[in-house]
Length: 340
Ligand SMILES: Nc1ncnc2c1ncn2[C@@H]1O[C@H](COP(=O)(O)OP(=O)(O)O)[C@@H](O)[C@H]1O
Ligand SMILES: [Mg+2]
Image 1: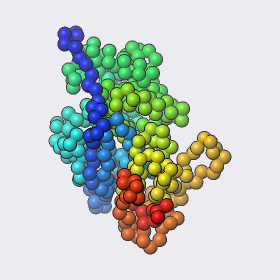
Image 2: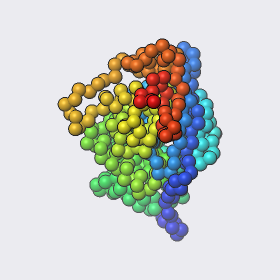
Image 3: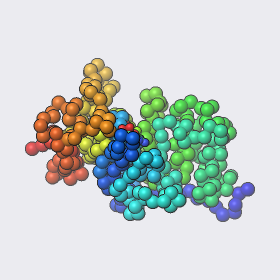
Image 4: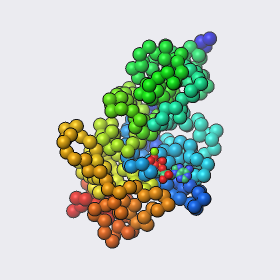
């Protein structure tokens, strides 16, 4: 039964002057049988409305734990310190009931495996419409119409049939689209996409990235795109933050990350990205493996794998502005490249 009052979806705040999200010195520790381990160390960044931040680093760099801490979704043995300001209010470590008002409505997160978010036993319709009915007082009919429109935006053929189906009836790429549609339905101001295309083939990856870009243009949604693939964020991000061993190694406007690279780790990641136009070039895999939390080097975490490492690298390098002309370009390296 439709209610008489018209229901209108919320729109994202596109006041670009203000910081939507401001993360300050976020750290994550885990209590383990071997003692306390630090997975994220003093991560700071901010995001304006409509902006896209790419968060890049190899597996184990602390990307997901950073995002989960912001969403209040860390494991029970974890502790988060620092500040996560959403429109000026600290949402880190606030009680779950209070956080639920932000989470899901203003900040949504999608994962590599859509089945983490999709319930196999419920129809797509139930899952998509519930959030609007419960959190936004939409009637069943209004929620259904909004779901159909969102599925159409994600170019899902026959949205009505899709709504009646169960998640297992779809391919991986389709499930990922349904999850994105579900996350976007409540018109979040920030969408955190954690390796959303890692399990998909390259063609479907490109389609999903194009859809995210389109949706961002239509709704002004801010996106945090988390991936191990620097190539994936190239065409999508305004700023890029490179993480390794739980720390920020380099952070700058995307162009500066790609064309004015300062950290040897960022350079190594760039050299390991396959490029279509250089299909014959040998890819340079980064030698060695990322460190485990138990064996984190005392100095720069990348030093054991870095060609430039010397004695200075036995001490951690502070995150510093690389040049006066680029105050928003920071790098944590004793041998910052291209420094005058
Ligand atoms: N519940 C936990 N207890 C202990 N360590 C954990 C736990 N969850 C994750 N970790 C560790 O935190 C580190 C960072 O993980 P993660 O943020 O998932 O990396 P990324 O997303 O960059 O691949 C990893 O070394 C991982 O093993
Ligand atoms: Mg991860």
